[in-house]
Length: 349
Image (spheres, rainbow, N blue to C red):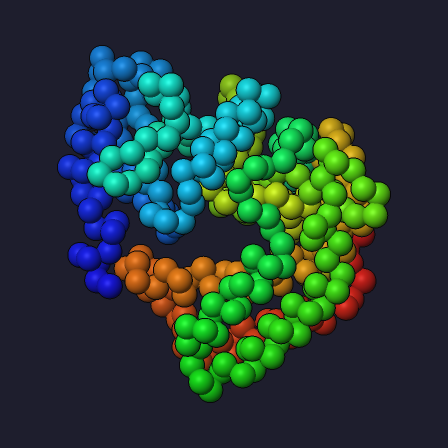
């Protein structure tokens, strides 16, 4: 599929401005595409005097990838964001316009959010990590109030088994690399499934002491989805963006992607995060054994995520080495390394 035939090709500047105008918001002509692979996101400046312009001189429009989430799933994401905002958890929630957060124009579902700036947090700073830990705990406190009704879970089936089957069924791997990756991914999945205490586990609403708790999560909490503003400004500190991947799962899912480096460095980072987290809510130390399994699941899920979107011109441009024999051999090696990592003692804190 070429750039001109992909569904997102319909999102011309005129189309985006017309979608904004259909909500009664008049743009002043300035429109900028923002970095996003999964969806298409634009910054639009509002004409002075138009509704919202005094409070929000610029807004962000997000057009959702067609057929990825259902309307009910997106609305549940929005409801979670609004619930977090009402609890004063620093998230960027969609604006209610005409009593709704989800709108439709020209066959696309889209939302409008306030513009919020910031920079990536400095994860080598213990105080920053502690601060993020406190806010994650606040997010999880809200997330534990009730389960999702429509959003999926972070689990072995949806993050590994189904993506692996899709990749092999669709011939996504070159023949010379397919067998090695298929064997490594199967070995990894079997190892994870044997000890996946959170799959089908209890929720905090319906406790069962035999399993680990699951709750509503951000679920894609990496450094790119946290923005930081100076502490001396109103509302300074971290705020979370992009709940597009919110799912149910164990609390540690929102912590492990913030860990990087050698084991000693990850140990220090984890300690700082949990120092902050446990000022607000308890953390079940058994979940630390899930860090490497969750990292392994993400490896498999991420490869399938790219392959399924290869007809979107943004993906070949961004992932230039994807799909080559060297890519898949590298993934096979990473999976073998993860199998070793899962056999090693987990991080402690």
